Image 1 (cartoon, helix red, strand yellow):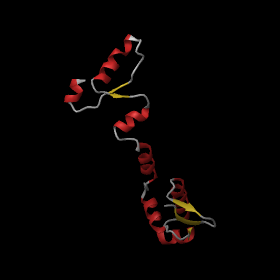
Image 2 (cartoon, rainbow, N blue to C red):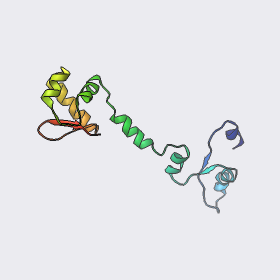
Image 3 (cartoon, rainbow, N blue to C red):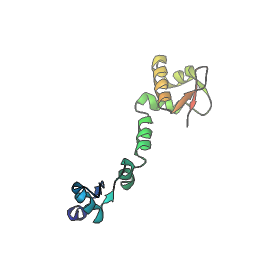
Image 4 (cartoon, rainbow, N blue to C red):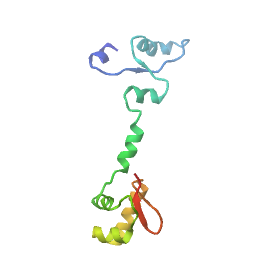
Length: 121
């Protein structure tokens, strides 16, 4: 425990039964200041990572390709038809269609009917 503190490291311990000799080590760590862990969320909170799942989801939803970035710039709050988006992007219609589908799966845009797309956020 002391070595971890000298190295500015967090120490976690899972408590055990008070009747078991195997629990002496974790209980000593807890007594000396280790963080008690009874569930995974305890570690996430202690390391300020409780938003990790949401942050990973946001990162996964970011546009990844040049086509996604270009098309995302062309989609607005007002519905725009796929033909207009394709014409303004100078990309082939199959590429535009596939890329718009990927952006829709990522939750960045949505189709509002009639092949019209709007920003989802």
